[in-house]
Image 1 (tube, rainbow, N blue to C red):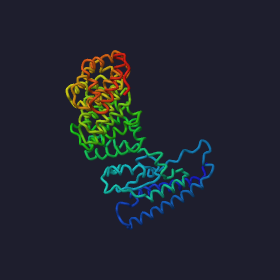
Image 2 (image 1 turned 180 degrees about the horizontal axis):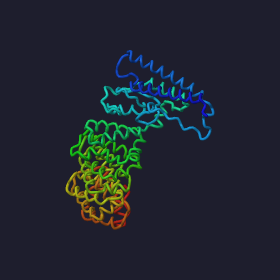
Image 3 (image 1 turned 90 degrees about the vertical axis):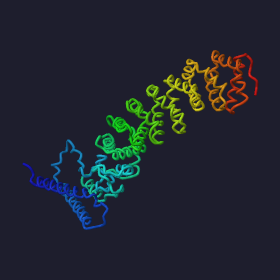
Image 4 (image 1 turned 180 degrees about the vertical axis):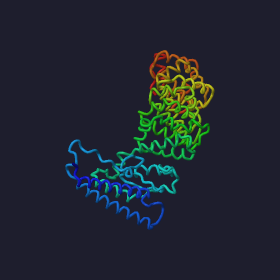
Length: 463
């Protein structure tokens, strides 16, 4: 037969819990009485409510202490206490450590809501515009959570800078919410842009967000790029935020293959090299460079349409975009050189920015695979023609670098014979050793010295 005293105690405890739950809901729904107002009777009422809640918590503790020991099972142990949902942040799904209230009256964990408010002015829960993006500590909620933790012997993490530093990633629900706003057909352009801006900020600041964005969310890349693939003429601001987010997540080694293999990514980055803001174009080039660090991606990036787009932006002359595009070309050439070499040769022979494009060719000629491709395609003869006819000292200098790397660096006899024949017939390198840029003169003299060794059998003269 059950103990009537124990039954009464349990009933009292349940009643107190129901009263406390009702009171908590009322307090938290008022948002700590923030809502841009001065002290009123309503805020005084909130203080009375917190006092009443504390009284109930203390009474609940007393009641539970009276529970007979025999009513507490010794084995198995009692399940872990369940945290009231009112104490859980909807962004982190964890008990709030530093609850803060925003202009909508909703309460969130400080470390989750702060970075979101820096980039958008909507409440994550209500989706309504905020009158401001400020937050204030929700002392009422904090006190309630503290009292509950004490009453239930719950170990609540302590707020500290270290906590934020060790666990800075954006809350999972926050990423999902932003992706939903970006990819949903019902989202307005403004809402998509604000969500993309927040995601850009998060993936820039927090390393864990970059990793989890790809690994933790199905089809995250496709959802991210949906607005750009759906619209013929994308909004430039939205495009910039999405491309920059893509660049941010591409810097993580383990995400690069998945990103590049998504059929939307390379075409959109290629398009964004030439369309959009300056920041969009630069970050597109940076994203392509990051992706080109993986060998399997170089085959994807070595396609003719990508090569043409890279060379186009190199010719246009924006220093940062050109630099990133040239370095991407260098990476591609290590695995897939043919399309790149053919495109560069065609444009150089067509008289298109020979100085700029030869500088790219000089850079990639340091790779043996590029040298073999140029020799196979007969480009050495074209270089000799440029050296004989060009009046631009920098163009000649770059062409000399390519000739040296192709024929002189490894001292292959058959290659050096081609250079020697050019010198014997036209005196090309003797002329260039006497005029041109300092770098060009130096390289021409170096070629002549080696020709004396391998071409005529005579040792080079000491300078």
